[in-house]
Image 1: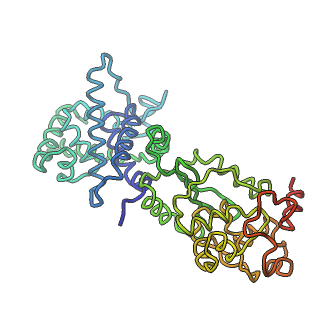
Image 2 (image 1 turned 90 degrees about the vertical axis):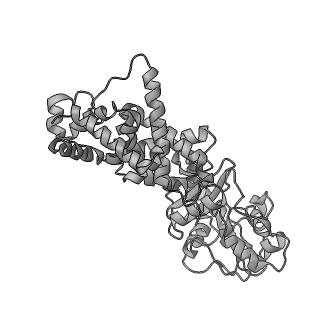
Image 3 (image 1 turned 120 degrees about the vertical axis):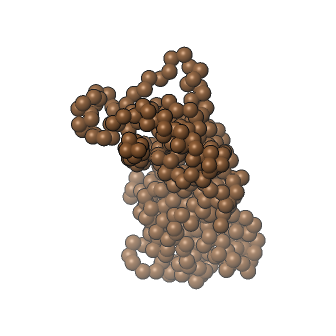
Length: 165
Length: 249
């Protein structure tokens, strides 16, 4: 059994990575982060161990790219404004919510998640956007399963204090 | 507790957003970035043709693989490319404009020679010599397994030559369909015998009437030298090829 073609790997994980990045850095930055993630993956791919957990591996790379983006945005004098992610042009406000129902809240919810500290943010995104179990969250964040659980819990606590519906 | 549940439900629902269209679009632009960074080791795409869909793959050196999709599993071919060349195999249709054009012209009868650069790395040794001789058999012409074996330096290697041709990684462009049995039989074809017949008919080598090739006119020792010289036009035309090309031009 050899390493599968990169396209197969890309097809298998592109949704996971994209969903993780849209939630982590917002749609504006997600495309760039996605390209950077898979270019890094492509660079290392031929040397990858065959028994690697590919999902954890690529999400670890995506997590680092997301952290880089957050750091870069932190240094930027004028941050990119938070915009509702599903909204295109005029399709905002009440009409948009009527048309899209609850989906309109998703962008706002992730915008709240993005205000969390790095590890908490990543833990929440990995749990809910990527549907990862705690041990795999730990692997991506480079911490223990318990620490991953703690980060997730603290992140949710903070979110609960701002998220009222 | 209730509000926590509410939040988690909202997060879980938000996490199920369908992103496949967006992720597909951005993934489709990866090949160009990879090429810029020197990471696009093998590009491939699928093209339609009269012999059915074909998977075509190229490296920086040139066309490396053509595979008949009706005969060979797409995933198997990609796995082979991944193993033998590099696992950095990416679908990149925009890199195949020239290949697509030349194949289209060929299948319309408007092209008798391919100008595409070829990457021979999936061949080696005797097999490569056989295929390189085969590449020089002109449009409309034919040779035999025995002849290409002799030309490749192995007079008794007809069977081995047949095997090499059967695993030709770049059929159509390296015209293994132009190699027949010494007795006039069609021999085999990795892309299916029907397709060999289709290609030979296209080139005017065999008539449109159904049935075996024109044994009477080209039986036994072929009238062609093992590898016909370039200036074939006057001397060794496939009888039908000229008629065919003048019909279509």
